[in-house]
Length: 357
Image (cartoon, rainbow, N blue to C red; front, side):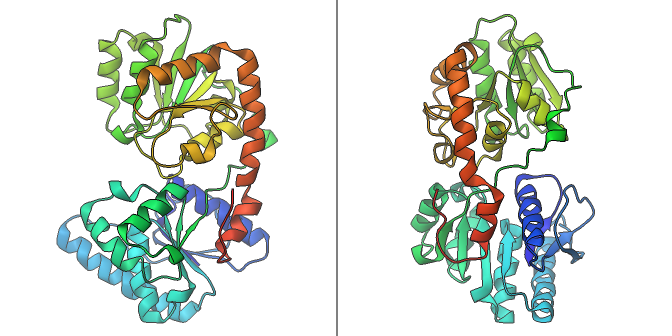
């Protein structure tokens, strides 16, 4: 049984989609319990269970909702008696832990940590060292998060590292080319939020004196107006393109000269693996956590020191101008991401050993 707030568009939701479909393909009996099924964006394996407790606004409403989630999960766990319970995201992890405690299923529970815990809200940071001692396993999406959780007081024996699976690339998607791509562009992907560092990407791009080069940033969010204003101030408004969010990113990756990760922090940047899987050479900041665990810098991609905008600009320049380097990075990236194949990752969730990459 997987417990996740919803299956709306997002990184954790895509991972659940890939894992549950793989488990179902391997003849496991799979259930996906969600608090809100109103906006299902991804296919899933097995049976969907709607707990009908979507997020609420207001402190009192949120507290009451959290209590209802715990007790509804207790009833579900007692009724279904799942052999494995895996929860994703803190808004599911916390009630899942309390429900598993009350239902006598703690030893069967794995909670998944998807992002840098130092960046979580203060109430989460206070609860994590206490609650994350209880479940059978705490699975972190990167080794950096394992170390961070251990420093917070989560026992090392509870912690394991399980990266996200690489995306499924199909021949049908590779054939789709009818999108309005510029002729020559570098690519950023993610929600328009300060965490993703697109202001730093625009600043790096503004120093590149190639009039034919464009910067495309796919995503939507609160920072759109600020990013457009920054591009205008730096004199590159006509060369920075913000098309919004896209359902199919494959053609954008496949036609880009370089994918650039500009994030200030991550847990495990799925977009980096996606770009590598689509044959797009990558460059980026070595932010905490994940990039240096995915990319062997100089071999399967280029990483610049976190926050060093001139170094990022130089890394991107090397990728887009050096054909021999590009071919080497693409070839080595295809080899590198094989260790993140879903057929390797999915069974690790059902065991209690350590994933090694």
